[in-house]
Length: 246
Ligand code: PTJ
Image (cartoon, rainbow, N blue to C red; front, side, top):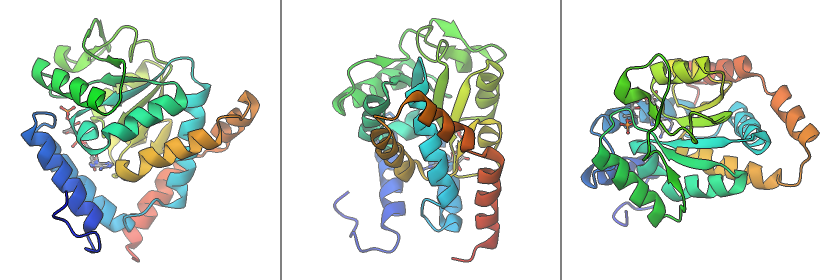
């Protein structure tokens, strides 16, 4: 990462691309993850590569949801592991959530490579290796989850998620938090809390909000959750992208 000069106007974008390439080389990120990254990068450019106010509201509401949850789980795929491994470990610690490796293109090799990568970044317990339960209404490979992880979770964070799986988790009645730079994609459309922001900015900001809310009581957390307007957040992101007034 040293070869990218920090004053380069596209520094963050280049850094992100580089991390995804490294992830592919290490067997963590799927080749499709590079296409996903390219799409995300285009939307981020149109958003002005910054956390817009409605995304910050969503990140605070997401932190409140995770703090209120009985069994919160943060789902990790190949792009998430390459981009924000240490940041996800910190968010888990700040909210009392579990980490679960959950892949769209599931192979045992990638599951163990990602679990090892998370442990290198400070994770103690990593779920997703048992895969002893299934999300209903999804094909076999893509439905695999841990019984005491995503299957049992009341609140799940699913960043950069596939639309079918986001819908199936929603149908299970879970409170779903999605991070996705495309506000029109199905995952944010079905999410209770759609976060239209780059995961690189979103996760550290959620952790900052969680730390800020560490001493808040349940009533205060519920107020934050109730005040969040998912439709308004999606609309604000879409307007910002369409306006393109950078
Ligand atoms: O590691 P696996 O096997 O679980 O596969 C993961 C990917 C991401 C390849 C898989 O889930 C996939 O193909 O996802 P999609 O359908 O391409 O959706 C990814 C979404 O994430 C798109 O809407 C992108 O705009 C968005 N996205 C990409 N990079 C970022 C992002 N959103 C936030 N931050 C990013 N850095």
